[in-house]
Image (tube, rainbow over the protein chains, first blue to last red):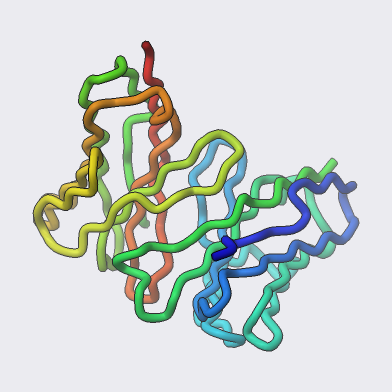
Length: 116
Length: 109
């Protein structure tokens, strides 16, 4: 079974530019989460999709961040325009709708975003 | 606010036992999970406690006391490959994870 994949693995952009991160969850996982870890800080929740619907987007920092999950499969997270404080590692995680507690969330390797 | 506190770093030698503590203060609590993360890698699920008590999975065990808002991860028979960061995380009612600050474990030969 393929794991959660994320693209790109690294992205270096200049302040003011736009970046789009992609996440492909494990096939059949309805739950999809985005998290972010800023240097030296804890991993923080951004938002949660159940299929194509946003279940909880309370962690999104501001309206420069836009997440989509069209068709309930892969998801994209767009940052426009990027600011210096957006630098960090963006993780995507997925889980089966009924098995989250016992099996946890499956995380991707992350996208390391650097904004110069 | 919501916070989960863990020691920042723990060191131990191969074959030893180490305990990583986690105290939490969150507005909602539906369980405590533990994740391992090697440098540059993805966080990997280790264990989950929904109720008080001990859960054992091979060399790893996790404990929860909801009345004390406290849990710990116990790693036995430490191996060099266990050197990594370990995170406790509270699961809230919407299933999102609220992570602790992370504990870096270094295992020495």
